[in-house]
Image (cartoon, rainbow, N blue to C red; front, side):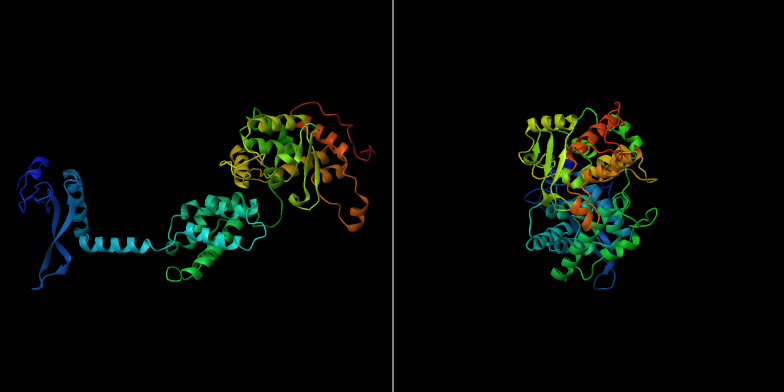
Length: 425
């Protein structure tokens, strides 16, 4: 039995066959259109008419598409199947059948898109940031599952994909899990021939535990105000105007505005000459407009960002330049700093910047009403709300100036808007 060479295979005449001494079962046969490869074996599962082990021959391609070395590798792989008691031809048939079936099974990503489209048809604002967040959060946090067929998904798949976020970003992870469940419910109804039950609810039982239990309070891990100056120095200095994530974090910390209200800010809300930012009521949690004083450091950064022309509408656009920045990049920024929060074992979250500011206000004896107004917290009780109509804008501007001095390591005048001192607005 000679050792095959490529030249010898090319020289084969039609119907002429040669075998390879290096690879038992590998055969080269000449045809009118060039040589082809075959693998001949004794099937471990098929019998011939006489009841004996059947000899079968399997095609491995042509010399034009499969080299001699590749043909040897294929033949060796087929030999391993035979040794394992499996018939290579039957295995190939099963693979083709599975591929044909998979071609008709929607992926999880396709199912999510279908569910999102269905939901949007009933939403009042189908194109706003919250509506887009529905599908974008699935794409980001369940990326490993997007290409998987809906018939292949198990509870553990969702649990493993969300394990980190479940601990780091409980609210985000819970939202994503709910959206995944909506998607799989839709898949059960739309494609019952492929999936008969929703695996997502069982995924909750496989999620890692959270320190202190899940959702025992609304406390958000915050940057301690004592650590804020070092945080600004190490992570929020020298920001390029195109670095929208760090710029967003800078504005967030210096204004104590809610993260979503910062992320979705539009240029028409700002009067940079006056150093004011008027957030319309429809974007505020309490549906009341919020007049935010801007310190010079924030104004300078925003001017530089505006000059870049990154986006005509949004101050902090997403990476595609199509809409406002989603919440996850900002959360990732705080997590990746590795800075310790006031919650053991956790890094700060963007929303914690508000608690950081409020803690500084209390620790330095400033009027707590100023802190509450800057946080856009409405006075509790109808009577208090009726009488406390003053926005305290001037006093809040002075307070934010002192907060900024503190953040940047400059001297702070402790006599500015002290507790119980009446300073006219």
